[in-house]
Image (cartoon, rainbow, N blue to C red; front, side, top):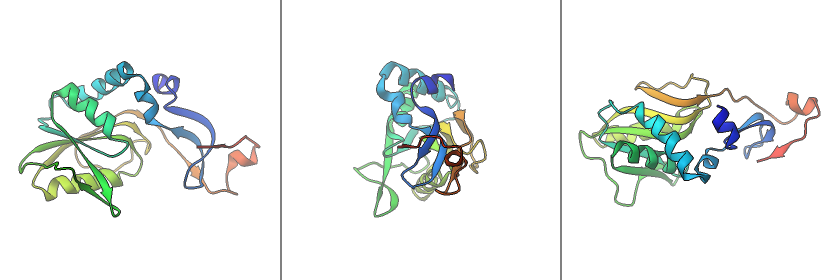
Length: 179
């Protein structure tokens, strides 16, 4: 947690998210990748938790899962592919494929509800692969995300959000940072 806060990945204060909701914690995993050696070390730590998973392929999601997924794949010596949204649905493009029977490790930057992870797991299943684990840098569900495969995260933090007009931080008069 200290390392993520020092890198600006996790900030505390009073923030307005793009959804318009207010929160006391802002997570921006992209900040970790400003310094390549730091990113490599952190992602290697996550990769080691899956060293014995039997994974043959690492998959992430554009945009947030690209860099952590690549670094985890590199640490494990595995190929890396990614999926992206097209017409609102998560899909593999750019010639990426999952061979039937492949054991796939899914890596994300942040997990809140697990919806994107479940979409990726469905892609893996539909293409005949098997998800052998899910890893992320920051778990924003505070460990409550429902994932039925081994799940590892480096930091777990509870992120509460409030509608404008119902925000206790506004009531305290704290300055609002629009992120």
